Image (cartoon, rainbow, N blue to C red; front, side, top):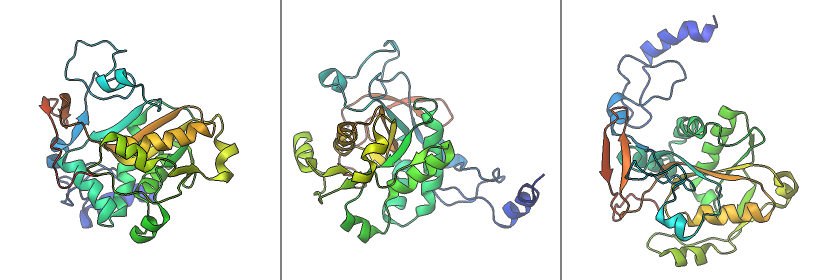
Length: 276
């Protein structure tokens, strides 16, 4: 038995494990290295439900649809990515974790958030995968001091043993905040803003890519990244996010934590903490 395992109960007694969401001590402790939330936060966490869209994995509100069913958005226009994996549905708990990581400097959250997402991905991409974060423009990176998506991507790559490409994508020009823009305006704002770093072009050709971001809202940014990757010859591109915002007019089935209770919810479009 390793010294770490022997000392873990003593360390947990002196420094009890704390919930990464609310910071409260976890009653009864937690296994060493565990990323568990406290019971209260876990029951409030919203997880993607099944069944879901075969193309984008948007949860449906009905259970009689076939495994190949598509949501209305994908029926109108098939997505450019090869699937979406979300660890959670955007709600109070995931919102707070995202904001704390992104704006409060709590970079330690990137580890548990990334590992939770890594577990959700399962076998949907292969061992040759390169994990690539959605990039920040250099001025925003300088101002914030870090790219939260890159920190999550690093945790995912380490957990799954995949290659990590923190600088595969570059944001070659600054873009305005996308909040309040309609889909067409978002697309125009991002046109030509994302590019592949020259030194990565040959290395991603034909490879599977896992594109990582903290939150998925309209999908405009992720679509711009996917198009840049595929234009450079990447093979399968799977998009992964910690929290997924469901459209305010969408009716979805959500599983509230571990209690297995299905509920219907439409997140408010006017939420002041909702990401752009």
